[in-house]
Image (cartoon, one colour):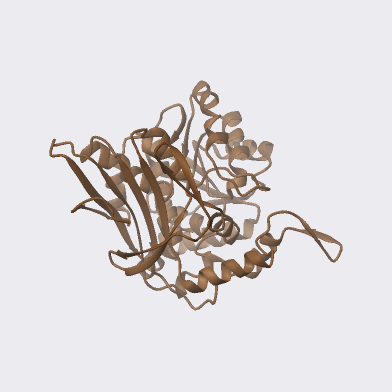
Length: 403
């Protein structure tokens, strides 16, 4: 159906490009581009070996708008799938506008010099994309992404309104590393160590990072400690579903992870401002990233399961009063590695990126403007989750969460 340009060659890209190649009737020609072309070539070789599909590769500085425009035109790409760093979102959106190409990403923009991720920078592009007749899809990963689609599916099929929603993300996987992040270390640590915020009673409530802990029994995993955090889908869900009274995001962490993250923060290794070292300017968190394991290389070592989903409470469509539903996916690290050579965290982001791009190429989500996932029809996306490795379940609970 369409030619696709994927930017970024990390673990998420590895999973997404393999899944695109498995759907060649939709993704008729794939080009993978990154600053480091050798990483693209390695993914292309794996795709050829596993799937038998040839993909093209290219070197690209994603901050260079002119170079991206040239590559879009050279490849004839109908959609650019941004799996690069969040700092690069706006530059890639600019390139899509200039080249006449649809856009999709998995994480919202944040400035490189400030640990602050919000949607207003990208929402400001609404009129530009609408006037250009182009579609921009924001946050087509799992969280954000699938978790927002889950909420929309519940509103379409189960609930007239959502009064409160909790997004729960548990990684029950383990590997042989003393300390490793399950996605890009720089982005992961910036996100985790930021103050926690949640939406309640029409305003944002702020608490210190990693201080509000609750134990929860996750399907397929068991009891895990989860921590209240800020995550970008809270902003978009509370904006687009204005009836929401409370929206929270929770993620699980082991005690060893918390200890390492706090020590690194305390000694300054997670700083994002430049410092001088032996006469050379460095950014500590970027130096730390070079020392930590690459999440994309941990697939073979990672065992266990991940479980991500929503618990939502609202008025039932059948008029029976207030009901609470838990909708979630369970994903096995070893099964993901066997299929595409990725661990489950990369897989659960890469597969929804593929499915979101497929919605655009199939014409389901061609809607000029800039859109978050909860603003779009969920049904075909949900069907494709079941068909392409991320099957979901929905269960009615006895009542709202007590935590």
